[in-house]
Amino acid sequence: MTSTTNGDTTPSRRDRNKAATRQALTRAAVDLSYEVGFDAVTADAVAERAGVSRRTFFNYFPSLEECITDPIQQVLDDALAIVDAAPVEAPIMPLATTAFSEVFSPATTPHLVRVMLLVREHPRLARSHLAQWRLIAGPVSDAVMRRTPDADPLWAMTLASSVLGVAEAAIENWLTSLPVADITPDDAALAAASESLRETVARSFGYLADGFATPPPTP
Image (cartoon, rainbow, N blue to C red; front, side):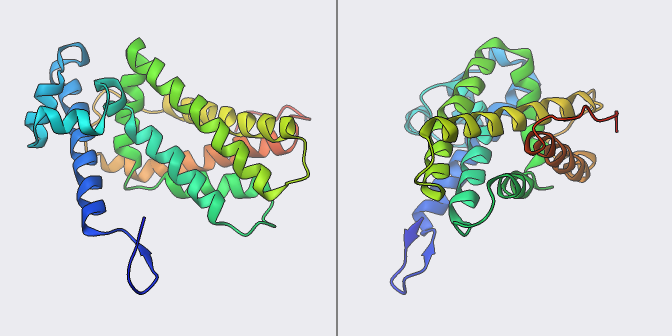
């Protein structure tokens, strides 16, 4: 975010242009992966599809893998930003549920699903995906400590890792329920299904908050 002269923290035109370029590169990479197969996609082809230079591609992403999985990173960053912006007295588990519910919107879910399906199929993408979840654990732990400064740091890290692990498990469980044969870039059915994704995440976080005390029946 860039501060404007009146004190607002709104994105500048440059920031908006950079975000648009980043999104264009990621969408081009994902689209090409479905069209020609991930193993056949190159940075040059992605840059050409997005209408930018090869140099611009590498200014944004160090690798094709990070380009394709960037929507996952954006979701994690957005969820963390929601947590950071909430009142310090807000309970952690309801706040985590709210944060992930907000980031899985009808606008973002279809593209995220296409990315996650690619991750499932290709080990190189899976490694990049796993690294993103691991890297966000530290910032999430720091966010917890800012709310509970007297807490044991091990407690905060355990909580952060648990929340992220539960969120990842919920997404994977939801993905297995989808009819994936004909997913398109703007699949209206997937946009509508974002509500069931939010419900799945909330149910998972409920199990964590309950300490997994009683195995629930199949919903």
